[in-house]
Length: 224
Image 1: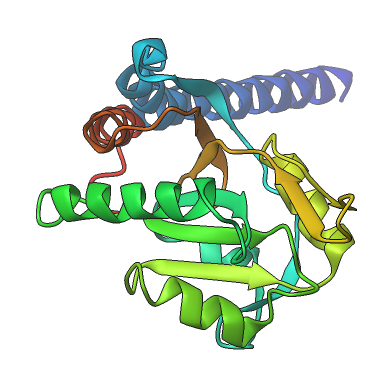
Image 2: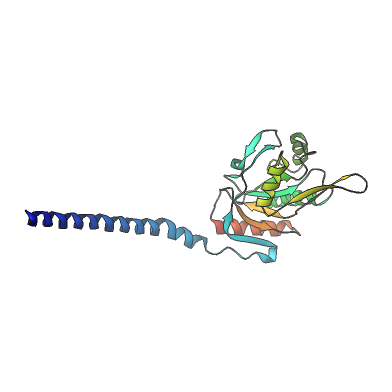
């Protein structure tokens, strides 16, 4: 009887070991088939420092938000997914750098049209007290249908800006006028809604186009 129990125990141990070995082999095969090719395809990010562009090894998360868009609709991080986005912190009353940057992006989009993915632009308001949805809509219409904006709670806007390495502040000058100070770089958000790169001024459309194409190629997003 004892011999039978020992035989049964040995067979059970062997069966368990076989199951474990098969499971391990399966995991190795899956890892080789799925994870390794993706890592090899991505490789190190392109060095675009000559274009004033820094590409992250790993994309950075964007702060969760619930804000109003230029149509007055409530939007969340979901609006950043499924396409590339240039995010920019600015405001509609900006006298110089904001319209200049948005006009540059409009020209870049014209050069990109028909040759791959065309990024959208998201203006994150640094002046929500004056930037109502209707004002954003009228302002952004001048640049094109791929230009959108968000406004609303100032703390939410600031948290969103800071997750993109940006910031802004409002103050009153000696004449009693409201002055808005804000970051001037562009944050490039990938189709998963994460920050992939930061582009610093001065901006030239041809450099932005070249940097964008190289990032998309490295990222492997295709026509996403």
